[in-house]
Amino acid sequence: MVGNRFCRIAASTGLFVVLAGTAGCGDEPATQIAAGSGTTTTSGALWQRLPDAPLSPRASSVMASSGTEVLVIGGQDTAPCPPGADCAPGRITRDGAALDLTTRTWRTIAPAPRPLLGEQAVVIDGVVHVLAQNHGPDGYDKPARLLSYDVATDQWRESAAPANSIGAALTSSGGKLLAYETSHEQGLVPDRILDGGTWRDLPPDPLAPSFDRVMVAVGDERLVLFAHELVTNPGADKPSIVQAAEYDLAKQTWRRLPDSEIIGGWYWSHTDGLLVDPSIGGADGGQTGNYGRVYPEGGIFDPRARQWRPLPAVPAEPTDDLWQGPATGGPELAIVRGFVLDPGAGKDGRWIRLPQPVRGAAEDPAAVWVGDRLVAFGGIVHTDRKSAFTADTWMWQQ
Image 1: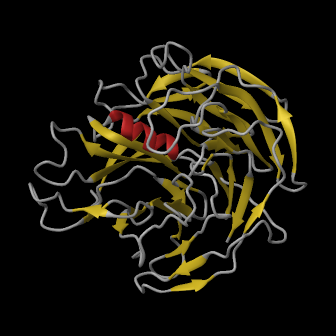
Image 2: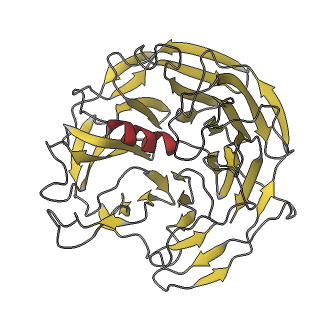
């Protein structure tokens, strides 16, 4: 279970970018799904092919947006794995490139001190921070290191990650970098904030011990933690719902928030002033230990009103012709399984059905949001004969 949850968290760290211009390359229009209506209308939004990056074809790169550029760093560029297979990783790279969104030109950047493979990136004041795992022959047994890339100077700095961290992820608030544990299943390790070059422990949160922990910033002084209660068999006797708590950075105090009625909580983002997990679907517990009703995976939390609300209804199931990228959220929109969520549209929000850029487009590209624009890079293309990496770069804008 820990491995599955790590993959979900890693997938949520992808980045998207902005593109404008004329349609081409077999672009298809996206369609809007009215909440709960079961109908779709054509939106006219198109995917656009961006210039090729000066990088080898690859998948699972780290992506980030500095505001003026989109950065692509690392990734795996050999030995693509066929669908459903369990493969040893190929070569994991350190090189990278940056795309200027105004001129649509690429530049190479200094290679990272360590190979990177799908790690999360957090950008603060023009510096990209990555908590790099050890991808060498010793696997993840060696401690992670904090890598920081200064976009202006094209220089990397390597420093210590939080001590005794088991499975940390990064976030930021008020210009401060924070590292939080994604689970307490292997031990109760404190969350930390980087203060003056030193990692300082946060006070224990009121949800601990817990698992599937995700921390999201709300403004410069508040963080909201979403997590599941850590019990022996979560979900066996009753649904393991998402709980929440709020941390005030100025007061250094926690406050318990209302519990949800959702059972997912893997893809949180601060989108359009709301905290959103766009996960589609739900579960009723099955024949043994049935919950009596279906509990949804995703939901919306309003941090100002401190109230939960459901996602808008999705009138169609995800299909293979939809975009095959990671679930991720940006400042205005969020995406999961090929459906874009606009949570601030109308009373309840709306869904936009997002087709692939072209038929047979890559699966699992890296991606990042810049405003309402999504930029995707790389991935794996599967055919009847073989699987191969790609270096294609695409952008979609509402």
